[in-house]
Image (tube, rainbow, N blue to C red; front, top):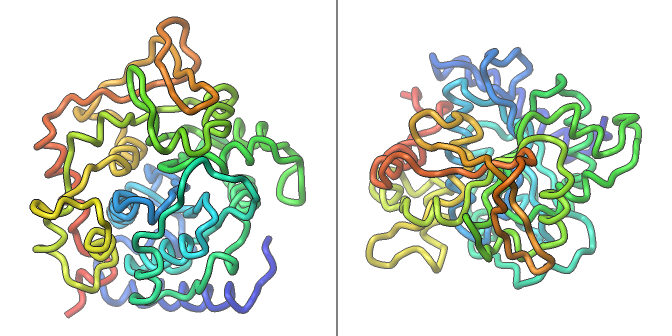
Length: 350
C-alpha cells in the first residue's frame, strides 16, 4: 500500500464526503469508487491516456464516467503516460467533476524521449479553472508502480485496460520485476490479472498513426509480447465519427470536457466538433461489439521500428481490430449522448 501523504489523505477525506453525500443527493446507484461491492457486470477499467494532446481523451473520460454512473464500469485508476506535469491534474479535474475525486491517478516518471512534440492544449487551463486537489504530476504516484499495486489486488482475469495514447507505461509494466505488491514479474502479473487490452492506435489494414509512432518501441513490444487479447480501434474508425458540438449547447461552462474542446486548436471552427478516436476504444471496452462493430481476427498487427503498422493475414496472435457496422451518424449520436449527459452526482440535486 502506498504511504498516506497529505495529498492522499486529502483525497481520502474528499472521497468519503462525496460517497456519503452521493447517497443523499441521488436515487441512482451509489458511486462505484466508494468502498462497496460493484455490480457484478461492471467492467473493471484502467484508463491510460495522453490527455492534453487531443480533446477526444477528455471525451473518452466522459464516457467512462457515464458507464460507471450506469453500473456498467468500475474505474480502478487513470494513468498519464507522458512527461507533461499537468496531465495527471487534468485527469483529476475530470474525475472530480464526475463526483469521483478518489480515483487514483498515476503519471509517467521515466526518462524516455518521445518521438515528437508533446502538447498541453488544455491540461493547464483545466487545472487552473476547475476544482481538484492534485496540483502537479510530480505529486501523483509513479504510474507503472500504481499499475502493479492495483492489478495485484484484483481478481484474476478481470481488468480491462483502455490505452488511448503511447504504450510506454504498458511496455514498462511488462518489464517490471517482482516487488512488495506482487511476487510476479510484470508479464506474469498482466497475464494473471488482465482480461483485455483495448488500444486506440494504428490503422487498418495499414497505418502510420500518432499513438504508435510517438513511442514505436513500446507499441511494438506490446504487440509482440502482451499476454492477453488486444483489440485495436484503428485511426479509420474514429475519423468518420465526429462529436463535440453538443457540448457547447447542452452542457454548462463548468464542464471541463466542454472546456477541453473549447481550448483545443484542432476542433473544427465551423462545426465545433472533432474526430472521435478515443471514445470508440472506451465504448468497445465496456460494451463489446453489440451491433456497433465486427472484429477482424484472422491474423495479427505487425508494428515496425518506426511505428508504421500492417495487418498480416494468417494465424491469430490474439489480436483483433474493429470494423464499423453502424453508420457514422448513428455512432455520433450514441457517443455524444454519453458525452453530454450530466454526472450522476449532480443530476438529482434540487
